[in-house]
Length: 98
Image (tube, rainbow, N blue to C red; front, side):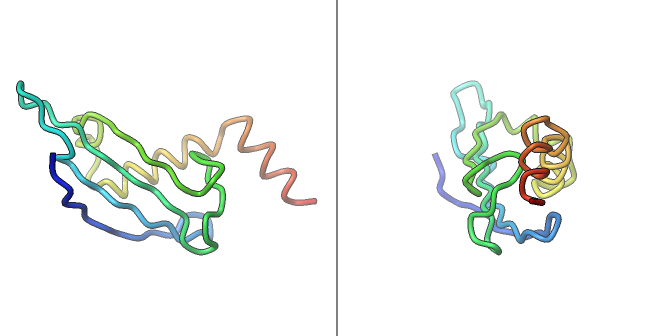
């Protein structure tokens, strides 16, 4: 298990997000890698996102799931985009307008 993370930031719909990524969080005996991804709203602090109501998400996933994207940021952007179409997020967005 390693604790070496890379950090990056991106802007998603006016929300600044920090992404912390560790591709080798756990390496199993069969050399399968379990990655750890953290997504946190920075500005505004802890603003809700389509993938988390609290503005923070800790996500463990096989590294192969992320490797289909150029970068972890691209994965997070696609994840946010897809989740933004959920009924729950659409309702939350609608309510925030009033």
